[in-house]
Length: 217
Image: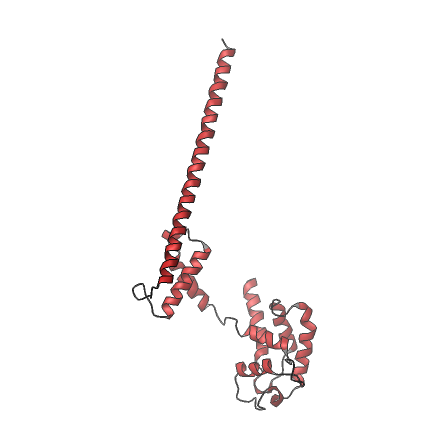
C-alpha cells in the first residue's frame, strides 16, 4: 500500500466519528485524528478544547443532542446541523464551535475521485496539443466559462451578448494585440543585440588576426 493510499485509509477511518445516529457517542480518538488531518480547520493549539467538547457532547443524551428532542430517524447531516446550531444555556454562544467547524469541513470532502477525473477530462479538452501554451489563469477561465454555458444550456450561437460584454471583448482584444506587439518588439530587440554582439566578435577576430599577421611580417 502506497503512502497516499495509507493516508486516505486513515482519513476514511477517522470520518466514522460523524455517525452519531441512534444516540451513538463520539469516538474521541477518531475526532482528534481527523482534526490532525485538517490543521487549517482545527489548529493544534485548539486540540485540548476540542477534546473537552467531545467529552461534554458524550455526556448528553440522544434527546438533548436534538433541537426538537427527537434524534431518532434523522440523517447524519441533520443531526450535525443541529449540533452546529446548539447554543449554551445562556443562549449567547455556540455550544460546540470546534466540533461544528470540524463536521462542516468533513461534509465538504469528496467521497471519491470521479469529479476530479471529470475535471481532468474537461481541462484536457481545453488544453490540447495545439493549445499547449495556455497559462493557468486562461485554462481556469475557459473551464469556468464552459461549465457556466453547459449548466445554462448555452452555446456560441445562443449566448446573450450585451454592450458590456462587447466592451470587455474589445478591451481583451486590444490587450492581446498589445501583448503580441510587446513580444515582437522584445524579440526584435534581442535579435538586434545579438547581431551587435556577433559584429563585435567578428571585428575583434579581424583585429586580432591583423595583429598576428603584423607580428610575422
